[in-house]
Image (tube, chains in turn purple, cyan):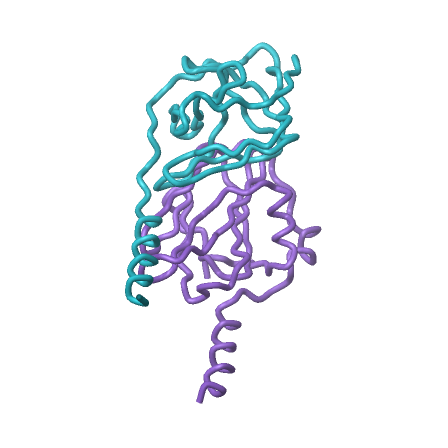
Length: 143
Length: 131
Protein backbone atom coordinates (compact mmCIF):
# COMPACT_ATOMS: atom_id res chain seq x y z
CA UNK A 1 0.00 0.00 0.00
CA UNK A 2 2.80 2.36 1.00
CA UNK A 3 4.60 1.55 -2.22
CA UNK A 4 1.66 2.98 -4.18
CA UNK A 5 1.69 6.25 -2.26
CA UNK A 6 5.39 6.92 -2.66
CA UNK A 7 5.34 7.59 -6.44
CA UNK A 8 2.16 9.67 -6.11
CA UNK A 9 3.73 11.80 -3.40
CA UNK A 10 6.90 12.18 -5.45
CA UNK A 11 4.93 13.35 -8.50
CA UNK A 12 2.94 15.79 -6.37
CA UNK A 13 6.13 17.15 -4.83
CA UNK A 14 7.86 17.57 -8.18
CA UNK A 15 4.82 19.19 -9.80
CA UNK A 16 4.76 21.72 -6.97
CA UNK A 17 8.31 22.82 -7.77
CA UNK A 18 9.34 25.46 -10.28
CA UNK A 19 10.46 24.32 -13.71
CA UNK A 20 12.34 26.33 -16.28
CA UNK A 21 15.91 27.29 -17.14
CA UNK A 22 18.40 27.32 -14.31
CA UNK A 23 19.95 30.52 -13.00
CA UNK A 24 23.29 29.57 -14.54
CA UNK A 25 21.60 29.35 -17.95
CA UNK A 26 19.78 32.68 -17.79
CA UNK A 27 22.14 34.82 -15.69
CA UNK A 28 23.92 36.24 -18.74
CA UNK A 29 20.61 37.15 -20.41
CA UNK A 30 19.10 39.01 -17.46
CA UNK A 31 18.74 42.66 -18.55
CA UNK A 32 21.01 45.19 -16.90
CA UNK A 33 19.52 47.56 -14.37
CA UNK A 34 18.39 51.07 -15.24
CA UNK A 35 20.32 53.67 -13.24
CA UNK A 36 17.12 54.92 -11.61
CA UNK A 37 16.06 51.52 -10.32
CA UNK A 38 17.07 48.76 -7.95
CA UNK A 39 16.46 45.02 -8.32
CA UNK A 40 15.08 42.53 -5.83
CA UNK A 41 15.51 38.79 -6.34
CA UNK A 42 13.10 36.43 -4.60
CA UNK A 43 13.98 32.74 -4.32
CA UNK A 44 12.94 29.63 -2.45
CA UNK A 45 15.72 27.02 -2.31
CA UNK A 46 13.87 24.30 -0.40
CA UNK A 47 11.08 21.94 -1.43
CA UNK A 48 10.17 21.28 2.19
CA UNK A 49 6.50 22.12 2.73
CA UNK A 50 6.05 22.35 -1.06
CA UNK A 51 2.27 22.64 -0.75
CA UNK A 52 2.68 25.96 1.06
CA UNK A 53 3.05 28.56 -1.71
CA UNK A 54 1.71 31.86 -0.41
CA UNK A 55 1.57 35.11 -2.36
CA UNK A 56 4.62 37.30 -1.93
CA UNK A 57 3.89 41.00 -1.65
CA UNK A 58 6.27 43.92 -1.99
CA UNK A 59 4.92 47.10 -0.39
CA UNK A 60 1.44 45.60 -0.54
CA UNK A 61 1.62 44.65 -4.23
CA UNK A 62 1.69 41.00 -5.27
CA UNK A 63 4.93 40.18 -7.09
CA UNK A 64 4.74 36.37 -7.19
CA UNK A 65 4.43 33.25 -5.08
CA UNK A 66 6.86 31.20 -3.02
CA UNK A 67 7.39 28.41 -5.55
CA UNK A 68 9.91 25.81 -4.35
CA UNK A 69 13.21 25.69 -6.26
CA UNK A 70 12.27 28.84 -8.18
CA UNK A 71 13.44 32.44 -8.42
CA UNK A 72 12.32 35.68 -10.04
CA UNK A 73 13.16 39.36 -9.77
CA UNK A 74 11.46 42.73 -9.91
CA UNK A 75 12.90 46.19 -10.61
CA UNK A 76 11.63 49.02 -8.48
CA UNK A 77 12.33 52.68 -7.73
CA UNK A 78 14.69 53.19 -4.77
CA UNK A 79 13.11 53.55 -1.35
CA UNK A 80 11.85 51.54 1.56
CA UNK A 81 10.69 47.98 0.92
CA UNK A 82 8.42 45.71 2.92
CA UNK A 83 8.08 42.06 1.92
CA UNK A 84 5.30 39.89 3.29
CA UNK A 85 4.19 36.31 2.79
CA UNK A 86 0.67 35.61 3.94
CA UNK A 87 0.68 32.27 5.74
CA UNK A 88 -0.47 31.08 9.16
CA UNK A 89 1.31 34.06 10.71
CA UNK A 90 2.79 36.93 8.78
CA UNK A 91 6.44 37.85 9.19
CA UNK A 92 7.51 41.05 7.45
CA UNK A 93 10.94 41.91 6.15
CA UNK A 94 11.92 45.56 5.80
CA UNK A 95 14.96 46.91 3.97
CA UNK A 96 16.09 49.81 1.83
CA UNK A 97 16.68 49.75 -1.92
CA UNK A 98 19.20 52.10 -3.51
CA UNK A 99 19.65 52.98 -7.19
CA UNK A 100 21.40 50.17 -9.11
CA UNK A 101 21.42 48.02 -5.99
CA UNK A 102 20.57 44.32 -6.09
CA UNK A 103 18.87 42.76 -3.09
CA UNK A 104 18.25 39.07 -2.44
CA UNK A 105 15.28 37.76 -0.47
CA UNK A 106 15.29 34.08 0.47
CA UNK A 107 11.85 32.61 1.13
CA UNK A 108 12.49 30.15 3.94
CA UNK A 109 9.95 27.58 5.10
CA UNK A 110 9.48 27.38 8.85
CA UNK A 111 7.18 24.87 10.46
CA UNK A 112 4.30 26.49 12.31
CA UNK A 113 1.73 25.11 14.72
CA UNK A 114 -0.51 23.61 12.02
CA UNK A 115 1.14 24.33 8.67
CA UNK A 116 4.43 25.69 7.45
CA UNK A 117 4.95 29.39 6.95
CA UNK A 118 7.23 31.34 4.69
CA UNK A 119 9.72 33.73 6.28
CA UNK A 120 11.38 36.27 3.93
CA UNK A 121 15.05 36.81 4.80
CA UNK A 122 17.53 39.36 3.45
CA UNK A 123 20.63 37.51 2.23
CA UNK A 124 24.20 38.49 1.26
CA UNK A 125 24.79 38.55 -2.49
CA UNK A 126 27.52 35.89 -2.37
CA UNK A 127 25.37 33.47 -0.39
CA UNK A 128 22.34 34.11 -2.60
CA UNK A 129 24.22 33.62 -5.86
CA UNK A 130 25.51 30.30 -4.58
CA UNK A 131 21.97 29.15 -3.71
CA UNK A 132 20.49 30.49 -6.94
CA UNK A 133 22.71 28.31 -9.15
CA UNK A 134 20.41 25.29 -9.00
CA UNK A 135 17.09 27.15 -9.03
CA UNK A 136 14.72 27.62 -11.95
CA UNK A 137 13.80 30.99 -13.38
CA UNK A 138 10.10 31.86 -13.16
CA UNK A 139 9.65 34.21 -16.09
CA UNK A 140 6.09 35.22 -15.19
CA UNK A 141 5.81 35.02 -11.40
CA UNK A 142 2.32 36.56 -11.38
CA UNK A 143 0.80 33.69 -13.38
CA UNK B 1 5.48 10.37 27.47
CA UNK B 2 4.87 10.75 23.74
CA UNK B 3 2.02 13.19 24.43
CA UNK B 4 4.25 15.29 26.67
CA UNK B 5 6.89 15.49 23.95
CA UNK B 6 4.26 16.50 21.39
CA UNK B 7 2.90 19.22 23.67
CA UNK B 8 6.40 20.56 24.34
CA UNK B 9 7.21 20.55 20.60
CA UNK B 10 3.95 22.27 19.67
CA UNK B 11 4.45 24.85 22.43
CA UNK B 12 7.95 25.59 21.17
CA UNK B 13 6.67 25.98 17.62
CA UNK B 14 3.83 28.18 18.84
CA UNK B 15 6.19 30.40 20.83
CA UNK B 16 8.56 30.68 17.87
CA UNK B 17 5.65 31.83 15.73
CA UNK B 18 4.62 34.45 18.29
CA UNK B 19 7.94 36.16 19.06
CA UNK B 20 7.39 39.71 20.33
CA UNK B 21 8.49 42.59 18.16
CA UNK B 22 11.86 44.14 18.93
CA UNK B 23 12.04 47.15 21.21
CA UNK B 24 12.70 50.38 19.31
CA UNK B 25 12.15 54.10 19.41
CA UNK B 26 12.46 56.84 16.79
CA UNK B 27 15.85 58.46 16.44
CA UNK B 28 17.52 60.96 14.15
CA UNK B 29 20.57 60.11 12.10
CA UNK B 30 22.95 62.96 11.38
CA UNK B 31 24.50 61.63 8.20
CA UNK B 32 28.11 62.06 7.14
CA UNK B 33 27.82 64.43 4.20
CA UNK B 34 31.18 66.00 3.37
CA UNK B 35 33.18 62.85 2.64
CA UNK B 36 32.81 59.11 3.09
CA UNK B 37 33.05 58.09 6.74
CA UNK B 38 35.76 55.94 8.21
CA UNK B 39 35.47 52.18 8.29
CA UNK B 40 35.94 49.47 10.86
CA UNK B 41 37.07 45.93 10.22
CA UNK B 42 35.92 43.25 12.65
CA UNK B 43 38.87 41.19 13.88
CA UNK B 44 37.00 38.40 15.71
CA UNK B 45 33.61 36.74 15.28
CA UNK B 46 31.07 38.09 17.74
CA UNK B 47 27.74 36.39 18.47
CA UNK B 48 25.15 38.90 19.61
CA UNK B 49 21.48 38.86 20.48
CA UNK B 50 19.41 40.88 18.00
CA UNK B 51 15.91 40.23 19.33
CA UNK B 52 13.89 37.94 21.56
CA UNK B 53 15.38 34.49 20.90
CA UNK B 54 17.40 35.52 17.86
CA UNK B 55 21.16 35.85 17.49
CA UNK B 56 23.51 36.88 14.68
CA UNK B 57 27.24 36.47 14.23
CA UNK B 58 29.22 39.54 13.22
CA UNK B 59 31.88 37.90 11.11
CA UNK B 60 35.60 38.37 11.38
CA UNK B 61 36.79 40.29 8.34
CA UNK B 62 33.50 42.10 7.79
CA UNK B 63 33.87 45.80 7.01
CA UNK B 64 31.44 48.49 8.12
CA UNK B 65 31.40 52.12 7.01
CA UNK B 66 30.42 55.01 9.26
CA UNK B 67 27.38 56.79 7.83
CA UNK B 68 26.75 59.23 10.65
CA UNK B 69 25.72 59.58 14.27
CA UNK B 70 22.57 59.34 16.32
CA UNK B 71 22.31 60.40 19.94
CA UNK B 72 22.96 56.77 20.88
CA UNK B 73 26.29 56.45 19.06
CA UNK B 74 28.11 56.16 15.73
CA UNK B 75 26.19 54.30 13.02
CA UNK B 76 27.98 51.74 10.82
CA UNK B 77 26.52 50.17 7.69
CA UNK B 78 27.86 46.82 6.43
CA UNK B 79 29.89 46.86 3.22
CA UNK B 80 28.87 44.20 0.65
CA UNK B 81 26.88 42.34 3.30
CA UNK B 82 23.50 42.55 4.92
CA UNK B 83 22.64 42.66 8.58
CA UNK B 84 19.21 42.24 10.16
CA UNK B 85 17.56 42.19 13.57
CA UNK B 86 14.59 39.95 14.27
CA UNK B 87 11.57 39.68 16.52
CA UNK B 88 8.03 39.31 15.24
CA UNK B 89 9.44 40.75 12.00
CA UNK B 90 12.85 41.09 10.35
CA UNK B 91 14.42 44.52 9.80
CA UNK B 92 17.54 45.58 7.97
CA UNK B 93 19.83 47.12 10.56
CA UNK B 94 23.13 48.95 11.01
CA UNK B 95 25.41 48.76 14.05
CA UNK B 96 25.42 51.57 16.59
CA UNK B 97 28.70 51.73 18.48
CA UNK B 98 29.97 53.74 21.40
CA UNK B 99 33.70 53.28 21.01
CA UNK B 100 33.98 49.53 20.50
CA UNK B 101 30.79 48.64 22.41
CA UNK B 102 27.62 47.63 20.59
CA UNK B 103 24.90 49.80 22.09
CA UNK B 104 22.19 48.84 19.62
CA UNK B 105 21.01 48.95 16.04
CA UNK B 106 19.78 51.61 13.66
CA UNK B 107 16.83 50.55 11.50
CA UNK B 108 17.00 52.59 8.27
CA UNK B 109 13.43 51.90 7.11
CA UNK B 110 11.84 52.64 10.47
CA UNK B 111 14.35 55.41 11.27
CA UNK B 112 14.52 53.97 14.74
CA UNK B 113 17.04 52.84 17.34
CA UNK B 114 16.76 49.38 18.85
CA UNK B 115 18.87 48.90 21.99
CA UNK B 116 21.11 45.82 22.14
CA UNK B 117 19.14 43.11 23.99
CA UNK B 118 22.35 41.99 25.74
CA UNK B 119 22.89 45.51 27.07
CA UNK B 120 25.56 47.94 25.90
CA UNK B 121 28.45 45.81 27.17
CA UNK B 122 29.33 43.64 24.18
CA UNK B 123 32.68 44.75 22.83
CA UNK B 124 33.75 44.25 19.25
CA UNK B 125 37.35 43.60 18.39
CA UNK B 126 37.85 46.14 15.60
CA UNK B 127 40.45 47.97 13.56
CA UNK B 128 39.54 51.54 12.58
CA UNK B 129 40.50 53.12 9.28
CA UNK B 130 40.05 56.81 8.66
CA UNK B 131 38.69 57.93 5.25
